[in-house]
Figure 1 (cartoon, each protein chain N blue to C red):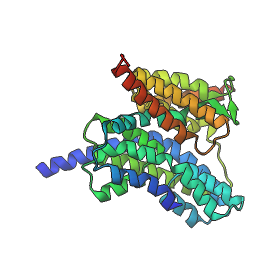
Figure 2 (figure 1 turned 90 degrees about the horizontal axis):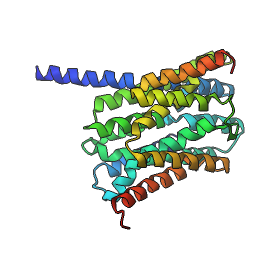
Figure 3 (figure 1 turned 90 degrees about the vertical axis):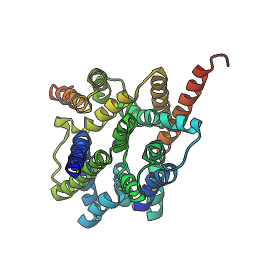
Figure 4 (figure 1 turned 180 degrees about the vertical axis):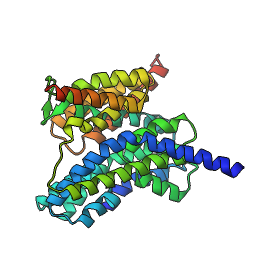
Length: 238
Length: 96
């Protein structure tokens, strides 16, 4: 009986995770598709194209890598570029880490493997609500990666036959999701200030030509501003 | 490539999850989600072809307003995504 109920709770968590990830999948399939098409055109084998989606699993990095591959850039620079572009995940993983204290090592390893900008954004809203539900979290992560690999595969299969995703506005699925998740993060005026300041800063840095570091630099400065504001409000005499 | 994408995601959760962090660091980490989401979102809405774009043709920016309102009122992830996509699809359909 107890076992059954536990199983039921867990499968509910899974289902909830899967449904939370639907907006991610809506965004990942067309982007994965675009990646698959580009990789195929760049001359990557089907195996390598899909292997990258399974083992590298980093959307922007894979698209950049394909571009650099075509430009015949040295493998080491491709790897270095990928590393810099993905350093932002270090901040995200650090932000989630305090909620994961009870998790086993292999669970952490599996969880971290599928941490992306989008799955992070969902976890960052879910985890502070209470004890992180593992089934829910893995449901989100797994759905996201499956949709990514599936999209890549569709792109490889469709090859040159590019269907336009624009009439369905699928290219707006991820920006819209980020807007919603950002709104859910806002709990007070300090968060609003941080959101505005970081956004302006990121835009400014990108326009100034900082194309690889702007997310990290703006995030570090924005989060620091949040701490400063909070301390300042706590001690109005200072 | 697999290694350099995995390490930044893995090391923090492995090393930080079992440690008690100083309160100031915890406070800082609590602001990271808001900051990193903003740092990724804003440029994608405001910059088109490497420059600021507030023109009518920048649908990503204008559609953000109704999307924001829906997100604010409903707190629904899926509803906001559908609303945003519908606005962009409609605008493209009428030829904006």
